[in-house]
Amino acid sequence: MDVLVKTGMAEALCTYIKNDRPFLGICLGLQLLFESSEENGPVNGLGLIPGVVGRFNSSNGFRVPHIGWNALQITKDSEILDDIGDHHVYFVHSYRAMPSDDNKEWISSTCNYGDDFIASIRRGNVHAVQFHPEKSGDVGLSVLRRFLDPKTQGTKNPTQGKASKLAKRVIACLDVRTNDKGDLVVTKGDQYDVREHTKENEVRNLGKPVELAGQYYKDGADEVSFLNITGFRDFPLGDLPMLQVLRRTSENVFVPLTVGGGIRDFTDANGRHYTSLEVASEYFRSGADKISIGSDAVHAAEEYMKTKVKTGKSSLEQISKVYGSQAVVVSIDPRRVYLKSPNDVQFKTIRVTKPGPGGEEYAWYQCTVNGGREGRPIGAYELAKVVEELGAGEILLNCIDCDGQGKGFDIDLIKLISDAVSIPVIASSGAGAAEHFSEVFMETNASAALAAGIFHRKEVPIQSVKEHLLKEGIEVRV
Ligand code: 1PR
Image (tube, rainbow, N blue to C red; front, side):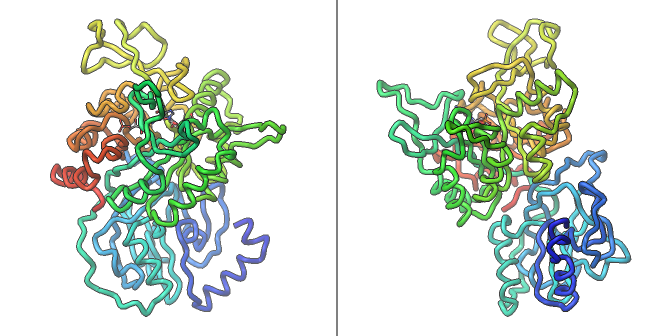
């Protein structure tokens, strides 16, 4: 709004919209039409639609941000939504506008997440949607197509989906690094060891990042994550191929893309200083929807636990202030440490379901940095709680012990963390069969499950995972 007001665009937009010229607002583009928003505010909006944009209420058990694929209740003919029917569309936001008597004639659909909020508006040629059509796969592209070419014949007979609420997400993850020949490849570790156990000891090569991401999109992945796993030692902006991968992937992949690895402040060999915000901005400009911070979030959390002062200077705080917490994921790389007694460490411990090798009945989950190479004096539980406070919008919860083992997710760990925070948690590491996905969704409060190896090795297609989840009564996007 500051920029729109300063440049005179606010007034121009109001005139444009009042004259019923073709307009499509997306996400914040819908929120700007209302009178004001509580986000970083109150801030005045364009004031065209009565109502105040407020934050979701997380006290009723709903996780905020609202991230993922949800259903719409279409309340009036909007034409651009004609192909959606009962399919899910992708939302990612912490603030929303509520329906009221004063704005009801604008509303074309609502969505339920705790309460019914406004999912889209329409008046004449003016449209706006809270969800992201550009990230909602084929149904989303049809929204854009219908807006751009209103003459497109409507089917009026939308294909029937089964969307009724927020779906559990299935995410494909691509660990990316440069191999010894200098090519950027998708690799995959066993407990984070990505080298073949041969004489040559080469980096395991499971394919090309752009092609694989495109394939997973077609196969029905709800999201694709790229982790630049050597980003902690190389400077990511020096890693132009990674930016190129994002640019090329986002030309053909219309679901959310997350990128992680190496997001931190950095001074290059010429003494030029780059803030983590600049690094993240470059990733966003290249096509990322969310960035994921690993090592730097651990350092920030340790510092905060020591000083209890929020400096606003950590990557996490800076990026979430500018881009919103829904754009910032913290990736946790914990290792299970068995204990004889829960009092053996100062960190949160749990009673494990399966005792350790020496019959230990307890464990804590020690955070690591630099791709699992260095253990730190902070547990996954403490880290998760602190990063939520510092502005993280989602947690990607790995587990070094389970990574690449195919024996299932670490249910003890995922339960511990997903019960401790009110932001969404992505369960990661260890998927080896479709049943592992239903297990994690039934036994924990994870919002999404991520896998790498089984998809790369074509052992279980994404579609079979989804069919299995549907059979088990778990709602997913189809
Ligand atoms: O610390 O901010 O530079 O971020 C580095 C990022 O790279 C972190 O997100 C960290 O998890 C990741 N990373 C670093 N080293 C490795 C490695 O494997 N040597 N990959 C690595 C971690 C873990 C998962 C994996 C799942 C699922 N990858 O995301 O995809 O465990 O695998 P599976 O289904 O095959 O079991 P920073």
